[in-house]
Each structure stands twice: as C-alpha cells, then as structure tokens.
Image: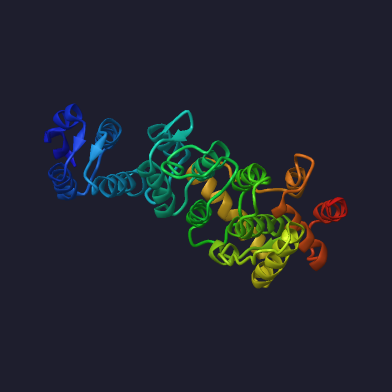
Length: 336
C-alpha cells in the first residue's frame, strides 16, 4: 500500500470529511498490492480520528484494512501478540474507553478473525459493555434511553459474540479475566428488573468456569453459551426467582451432557495448547480457580438474582464440582 502516501491525505484531514471518492481511491491503492504498512495504518487511524463526517462505506473499509494489517500482516500472522493488542487499544481508546461504534466493531472483528488474541484484548472489549452498563455512557448507549445499572438484549448479544470470538473454534473455558468482567456487570445490574437474556448468558458462562475448575473437559463456547432465554412474566414479584430458576434449570440441563471428565491425555494436551498460545501472544492465560470463584460469588455480601438462580440449580442438581465450590454453594444456598 505504498501508494497511499501519494493520496490527498492532508486535504482530507484539513476538510475533516471522507467522501465516497476518497474511499474508492484508498481501496484501489490498498488492493493494488494488498499490503499495508505500520505507517499507513497510522494514517488510517489519523483519518478516522480527525474526520467528523464520512461516507457510510468508511467504517467497513477502515475495519477491513486495519484487521488485515494487524491479523494477517503483522507477525506472527493469524495471531495477535500482547504488544500488538496494546498498540490497537492505544489507537482506539481514551482513558481505557472507546468513543465510537466503528472502533468497538474493529476490536471485535480483530478478535474474531485472529486464530488467537491475548486475554487483555477481549477483556478490554468486554469492559466497553461494562462501561455502558455501569455508567450508562459510551457508543453503545448513544441515542438510547437506557439507564445505568441496566443491560439491553443487544448488549448481551454483543457480550456473547465477544466470548465466541475469543475462543475461536477451540474448546476453551471462560477465563478468569472474562469471568471477572461478567461478575462486575452482574453486580451493576443486580438491583434492576431481571433480564432473562443476561441471566442465561451469565449462568452458563460461570457454570463453564466452575466445571473447568472442577476438572471437566468443556465443549465449544458456541455449545456452552448458546442462547436459550425464555422467562414468563411472573404474576407476583416474589415469584421472579422461581421463574429464573426454572429457566436456568432448563437451559443448563440442555448443555450439561456436553461436559465430561477430562482424561489425563486431554489435560496434557490442553496444558500444551495453553503454553503454545502464551509463547505466541506473550501473555499468560489465567484460568479461574475454585477459591477465586468462591470469593466472587456474592462478593458484596448478597447474591444477585442470577447468582441465586445458579446456586439454587447447583444445590438441587448436585453436579460433581470442586469441594471448595460444593461447600460454598451449600453455604450460599442456605443464606439465600
């Protein structure tokens, strides 16, 4: 993409607009040799940041070009290293927060296209939804009448998409970093009316963490976290937990058979795969341990509605889980 420097970049920056003719020129030069350099990627970010008006085709081109650069041209090809992930975060965020939907979509697309990305990058993506939920601000809330402390079905769908993208095609348990953000979101919405879409995702994700911490081989995330949220409107407020529990029982039962005891060979292969990915991305993958899970459940002194539904399910169905988790579930169930 060496011809990019011959384009009227300064003119575009000066007028702060990107028209269709500009995009066609950029696209023509880009696909002339199919290569974009680091300097040229910086130019595209400068255009995206400086121009306050652009043709509807700009976001698609911008996301495609930067994804091609960081996923398919930067070494190691197909993977995102921790350094490259931090470079990307620095380019799209201010004080750790993204301002536009285009930049958020870029992050999700990069995670999705990469064979593997550092955990810090997916955590950063998940935290953008957390920002919308906790603060009621950011690109996900622009033009929407949603209060802080609530979560929309669209935001739940985006979280699920991020969790799917990070794991790729592999059978990868939800990591501690990911679960940590999910717990934070659950705490933030605990006082709002139950959202069945959120409860469905949350209990399946945390159950996935629990089963992995208890020595089970986990299914793909598409299977483990697939959406099955149906909750009938309760006649009385006191029946909300019962309705959530009924939904959780049905939805978890549908995926429970996908978990099985991990063999010694599977444990060894999973450990080698983690080590391989850590070497490539230069970032450690921290799995959630049973003691950490116990410290997160009901951390503020009380269980959220979604946590209550999960704990009630575990107490009733009594799957074989780590002894530390079993003790905590019994204790929390009695307190609830």
